[in-house]
Image 1 (cartoon, rainbow over the protein chains, first blue to last red):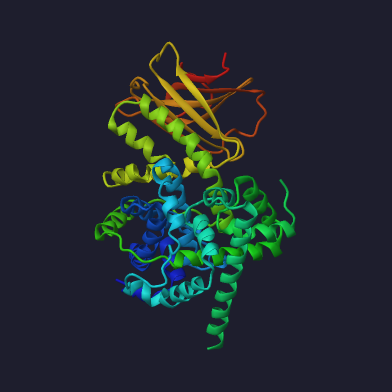
Image 2: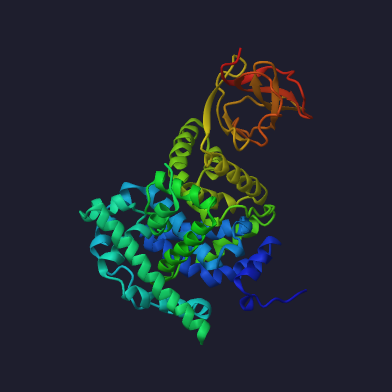
Length: 199
Length: 281
C-alpha cells in the first residue's frame, strides 16, 4: 500500500489526486484550508451554522468537480476563496432580509478586517501565513473610506450603487474609492511579490 | 450593453469585487472573453480582490464539520469526475454563475417550492430539495448520510439541474394528469441551448410489472423519446433528459408527455398518456 505524505504535497498535486478519488488528498486540502474558507464565509454570512454549511458545500464541490479548478488560471487558494466568497454571497442573498440588517453595522464598523490575526492555524501557517500578513499590511495603507467601500462590495455583496445608497455617498465617489483602493492594494502586493523574487 | 477596452479598464476592479450590476458584469465578461489584453487585467484584478479574503481574521469551524464533510465525500466517491472544461476562465464561469444564481435561485426556488408543496412525504421533499441549488444543500447533506447509491444519483441530478437553471433560455412547463391519472402532476424545466431538461412528477399510479414511465418530447409530426423513469412508493419520479431532441425537424414543438411503456424501452409511443403539458392534441 502506498504511503503518501499528503501534508507535503502542493495544492495542485492534491487536486490531481482528487481526480482519482483520493480521499486522503481531499482530507489534506480540508485540513489546509477549511478554517480559511469557514472564516471567509463567516465574514460574509455572519452566522456560524450557515458558514459551516457553506464550508461543507464548497469542499464537496471541490471533491465532486475538481476539474473546475484550472491551474493555468491561477493559484488554488485564490480559486477556492473565490468559490467560498461567491457561495457565501449567494447564501447571504438567499437569506435576504434576515441578514440585511447586519450590513448596516458593518458599514459603520470601519475596521472590519483587523490588522492582527485572532488565532494561529498550524496548517495554514505553513502555506499562507506570510501572504496573509502581507495582505493585512497592505490593507493598513488604505484610507478607511476606500477599505470600507471595497469590503462592502467583496464581503457584503453590494453593487456600487447599493454602496452609494447605503453610505449616502455619490455613486461617482464610491467608484473612485473602489478604483483607488484596488490600485493601492495592487501596488503594495506587487511590491511584495517583487521583494519575494529579489530575496 | 457593449464595453470597449477603455470602459473595461475603468470597471474591472469593481467587477472583480462583484460590485457591478448584472448588465455591466455580463457586458464586461463578454468583452474579456474575446480580448486577451483585458483578460490579463481581469486576472490581475481578481488576484487583488481575492487578497481581501486572505485577510479575514481566522475562526475555526467545529471539529465535527470535518467528519461530516469526509463522510459525505466518501459517499460521493463513486460520482465520476467530469472532463476538464478549460475554454473559459474559471472566474468567467464563476461570475456567470453568480449573475444567474440570483435569477436561477428565484426561478428554481419558486418552482421547487411549488413541487415540494404538492408532493407528499419526507422522502419526496428531501429528494427534490437535494436537486435544488445551494440553499437547499443542507437537506442534501442529511440525505447523503443515508444512502450512497442514492447520493450518487442526487449529486449527478443536482449538477444537471444547476446547469439547466444557469442557462439564459431556461423554461418551465407545468404538466397535468390525464383521465388515466387525474391526481398526477409535474413540471418540466429545460433549456434548448444546453439540451438539458429535468422532469419532476408526483401522484402517478404504480406501474404494472415489466413497465416504466416514458417521457416524450411532442412535436407536430412526431413524439421523440426523452427516456424511461420509475416512481417511488409515493408516486414521485424524476428524470434528467440530456441531448434534448434528435436533430431532426419534426415540425413545431407542442409540449411534453408521459406514457406507460415496456421497461425495455420503445422508439415509438405505444402506451397511454398519463401526464402531459403544452399544446398537445
